[in-house]
Length: 556
Image 1 (cartoon, rainbow, N blue to C red):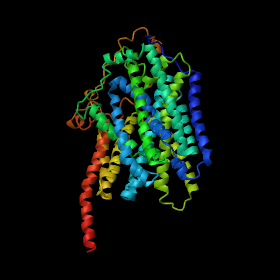
Image 2 (tube, rainbow, N blue to C red; image 1 turned 180 degrees about the horizontal axis):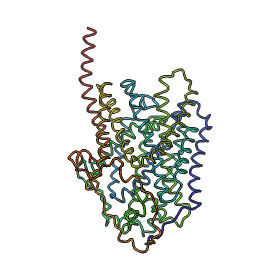
Image 3 (cartoon, rainbow, N blue to C red; image 1 turned 90 degrees about the vertical axis):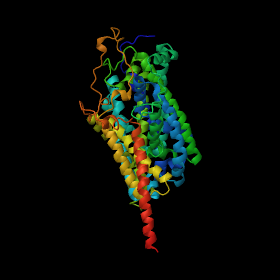
Image 4 (cartoon, rainbow, N blue to C red; image 1 turned 180 degrees about the vertical axis):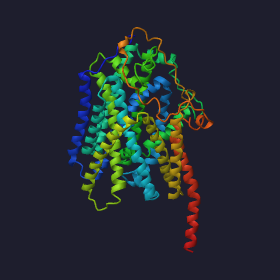
């Protein structure tokens, strides 16, 4: 096994590989702008003319789930907390079944473009508007972070130009979304999945070669307590246990796969309901493959640095930077491969951002423009959709710039994604599963669910759970001897992900902080969904009854 030496740097070939990925993505957009007569109608632009087939849609669903947060975050998660994260494999199965069997049939049968149209058909205009506004705010917030977070992590380790990367990502994304619509988004995602798999594969193969085989990596992980798959502690305050991942994870991801416009828009663009369902089930295989790759990268990280943790040794300033650090360490003799890994991380970003831009344009046109300007022709709506793509692309780049100023607000905003998703899923579940639910119950339920999610989410930001709730595993630095030269210490600014700007230090812990605010972050969405459902049912029963009595008396 090789000893770690000084890490490499980015060379010309790495930039060539990265630029190549951006150029090909843009070229796909140009192709679909003109192929098959271009984007004649808003349905062509936003739904691919509802002529898509299962395999590209499945790969696209996998790609947009896989943001750079997954590429950089999951391996460092496994490195610090162990492979219990792989229990998400069961979660993904439940999520796909719920989405394909509960939500998909409803949305596909109605032939709608925006999922929020369902809310008006089932309840009323006001409920639809609330859903739309929540989605727009949540998605712009999240997308800004998805652009900025990886750019910062990669910049600090590889010296890759921060704002160059942010602007290039945003501009290329906006370019192919605006020109090619949903077809371009789906086919660039297919290309980007290929890049992601290649990036992961290069790291896994080289790590296995350097460490002396896969068995060595697994052996090191076992000895370091990293193969901690089975923790059946039912306590909802533990960050990751079998139950928090299965129950909390299923609620969190169902709110994304089941009702989030970015995902739903794709599978309802399939040419038949069978193809739409098939796309979800094929995507499950993609999710499992990506999960396996990222968990294995985490175990390779541990095997490589089990005696000298770069984070504790201050060689990197945040866990997010561990993966780029490993890449420059083990792939430095292969020009172009570090660039391939950066292209892999950015492919995750591009696919997530492009699906967000397309979904935002769809929701704006369908929910905020079409109902109020009924005289607009299909051609005009197509132009407006393209215009909205440009506007949202610019907004997301602006949000990334804001994210850089907010620093520690990033983690808060990522939690907001869970906080908003939960109540929205509760709202759709109320409409689909509870026949007697009415619009008053829906609105009151949504507000109650949102308020509860915000309360627990913001509380957890201000008073983070104690280490015994998160169970970080042992990291060593005793092997950091003279084999690492001192000049190798990286000069980095502090990464903002580790702490929260809201955090209140040296405060007397109260039972509220140690119980309610220490709830596993995976349960934020669960709480939001269940409160929305419960309050919605409780309010619908008496209001529905009162309305019934009122009409009965009125028309007697």
